[in-house]
Length: 204
Image (cartoon, rainbow, N blue to C red):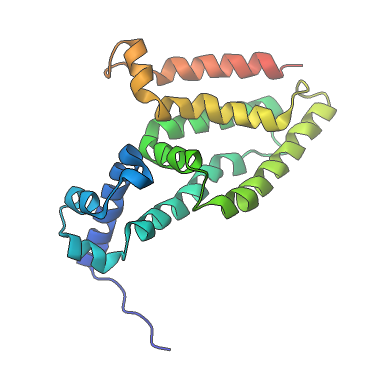
C-alpha cells in the first residue's frame, strides 16, 4: 500500500489555521449555525482551498471534537487514588476551572454538542467518559468508606464540579456583565469560593 506523503509546512499551517478558525466559528455559532464559508473567511482561505483539506464542516467538527474529549478527560485522569482525598478533589476542581479560563472556546464547543444531544460523540460519552467517571466514583466512594472524606453521591459531586467550573466559560458574558465588565477577572475569586465550598462539603 502506498503511504500518503507527509504534509508540507504550508499545508500544516493551513490545516492549523482552519481548525483555529473553526473553533471560533463553532463555539460562537454552534454546529448548525456555522458554515464552511464562515470558517474559510475566518481562516483567510478560499472555500475551495479549505475543502482541499476538509471535505465538509462535519469533517472539521469531528476533528475538533476528537481531540477535545481527550483533553477534557485529562484532569479527571490525574485524580490519584493513592493521594490525599480532599487535596485530589480540590486539585481536580482547580484544574477544571483553569480549563474554563484557558480554553473557553473549547468548552463552548463541547457544551453546544451536548445541548444538541451529542449526535457526534454519543459513543464516546457512553464509552470512554462513562468508564473513567465510573472508575473515579469507585475511588471517591472508597475514600468515604474509609472515613477520609464525607459521604456524598460521587456521581453528582462530579456533575457539580463540571457545572460550577464550566459555567465561567459557557456563560462568560453573563458572568462579566454581573461582575462589572469584560476587564474583570472572575477566576481568582471563583477558585477561592469553589475551594471553600468543596472543602466544607467533603470534610468529615
